Each structure stands twice: as structure tokens, then as C-alpha cells.
Image 1 (cartoon, rainbow, N blue to C red):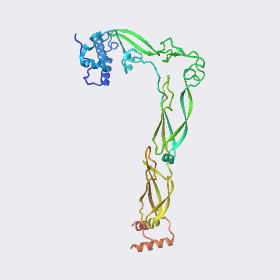
Image 2 (image 1 turned 45 degrees about the horizontal axis):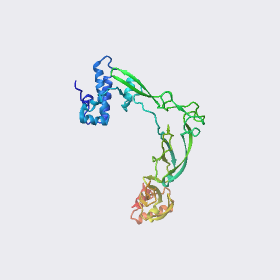
Image 3 (image 1 turned 30 degrees about the vertical axis):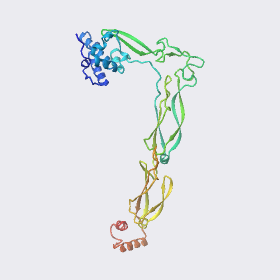
Image 4 (image 1 turned 135 degrees about the horizontal axis):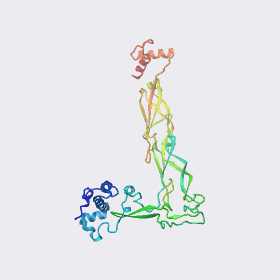
Amino acid sequence: MAKRDYYEALGVSKDASVEEIKKAFRKLARKYHPDVNTGDANAEAKFKEIAEAYDVLQDPQKKAAYDHYGHAAFEQQGGFGGGGFDFSDFGGLGDIFDMFFGGGGGGRRRGPERGADLRLEIEISFTEAAFGVERDIKIPRTENCTTCGGSGAAPGTSSKTCDGCGGSGQVQYAQNTAFGRIVQTRTCEKCRGRGKIIDKPCPTCHGSTQVRRTKNIHVKVPAGVDTGSRLRLSGEGEAGTLGGPHGDLYVFIRVASHEIFRRENYDIISEVPITFVQASLGDELDVDTLDGKHKLKVPEGTQNGTVIRLRGKGVKQLNGHGRGDHHVVIKVVTPTKLNDKQKELLREFARLGGKNVSSTDKGFFEKVKDVIMG
């Protein structure tokens, strides 16, 4: 009987992605596996067919050959499964074979692994965020043991090759089934994948090759950061294993609030209260900025809510040039207590403005505000 088209066997199109091919195989494998269909010869044949199709289509080189020559591309090699097939070649399908055979079907020799990343949050002041700051911080982390140099063996001794795996860190188990010879690769339990056995462990790390220490790190926080900004310190995370590199340290910034200033992007906003006399006649004030006191000229006739911009007095731009602006919001304050003389002067002011104001009128001060504010 002629072999069925591999794409047809998996129920996918010729332009299907690797993920789509993998998904289709997983679905069919669960359906037709002989362990699920005991004694069903048809299911066994189906499983062999989809496994053969997947072996070809998941491999870019095999797939290209099949697309060009069809089944003939593999006939000279004796066909699929001539010497059995190793499920450890089916990358990413360990979950399926764990379910079917109870083992790690996607085993790989354990090699150097990068250390884990660490996260730390620090709080800085409003001004420090605006201009930048340097801090010394302490971070607990895993480091390679200096007593044994990361070998795990006591000084003056050395480890030996594991006789359980021959130093590979992996062992293979073969199982003959009705649909072929299955080879599973697992991590060696004797050496835990290291490939080495330690007879005399290091007294400092007890053979683990690593210790827990507190590291002092100097952090430079650039000007312009804000709450939520993140700094990455390469290589300052946990130590790697089997000679792998350190992970990274991520420092997250939290900026404390300010008594006077409020920030919007790189601009600073603050409010300055003045009297209605200052608003009417104008004045020159000393206002607070990030750089200290600054002379602010309030023009006559200034209205409540007027915003006066101080260019270049804001926050330094992060990783850029220049600074934002400082926006001063004018708040005209209406007095709540007036003596008789002050009241009389205000009435005179109102009369001169063409308005007759009685001290007994309701909303007297509201009317005065209306007169002052125009």
C-alpha cells in the first residue's frame, strides 16, 4: 500500500508552521497511542504513521527534502524507523512522553546554566530623581564558593567521573514496544546531572559549589528617573551553575513625593499664593525651584490660576539633553478678616470702580473679589 501524504496524515496544510505541526501531532498522538488503545492494531498503525510524519515535517531539512522529492527522499535510507527512533530528538514534546511512558523523553545533557535575575526596589528623594544620585546597596545573592573554586570538592581533593553515566550527566533507557524501540534519556540520579562525584565535599559550600553572601553594589541612578524606572546591572544577579554566567540585577525606582513640587514628565508644577493687592499691582517674589530660590515677576492684573513658566528649571531629561520647565501656578488669596479701615478702603475702591457696595450686602467678599478680578 502506498504511503499516505505526511501533511494529510497530520491533517495540516503544506504552509503550516512548526507549532501547528506540533499541535496536530500532540492531538493525534494522544488519540492513537497503543497504551490508550490496547490491542487495537489499527490505532498502532495510525500512531506509527503520524510519528513518522512528524519526524519528517518538524525537521526543516527533512521537510524540504520531502516537499521536493516526496517519500522517495527517504527510501535509500531504508525508510523511517529502520533502526528504531529516539524520542529524545523530538524537542519540546517531553510532556507527551512523560504521560505515555512515565519518563523524561526530552532529556539533554546538563551544561552551564545562567544564574537567576534578582529584583530590588529602592526609594530616592524627589530632588535625587531630578538630578541623579549614587547609592551603595546590599543585596543577598548566591555566589560561587571561593574555598573550592566552584568545584564542590574540599581543598586538596578533586571530584571523579560518575560511574553511573560515564560523566555525561545523562543515562538512557531503551524499551521495546509493539510500535518500535523507544529510547528515553534522563538525568543521572547518582550525580544529579553533573557528571562528577564528590567524595570529600568542600567544608564551606558542602559540595554545592555555591554559597549565600551579601554583596555591596554601587548604583548610579541617572538624572530624570521617575517611579517605575528600572536599572539593569548586568552580571550582578545569582551565580550560574556549572560555570554559567551570573544573572542580572534589576533595580526598580520609587520616588518620594515633595512638599511643594509636583512632576509631570520632565516639568515641575508648583503653586504660589499671593494677595489680591499683589495680583492687582504686580510684585516680585522669591519662589522655590529645584535650583533654589528664583526671582519671579508677577505682572499687574494677574488673574487667579495664571501659569508663569520658568524655562529650563524642570527635571533633567533621562539619557538626553536639556531640562523640562517649571510652571508656577498663581493662587490669589482672598482675605477672610478685615478691620474697619480696610473695609472702608475696599468700599472706596468699589465706588471708584463704579460699583456701590454695602457692608450688609450678602456675598460682600464675593463682590469684592469680582471687582478685583474684573
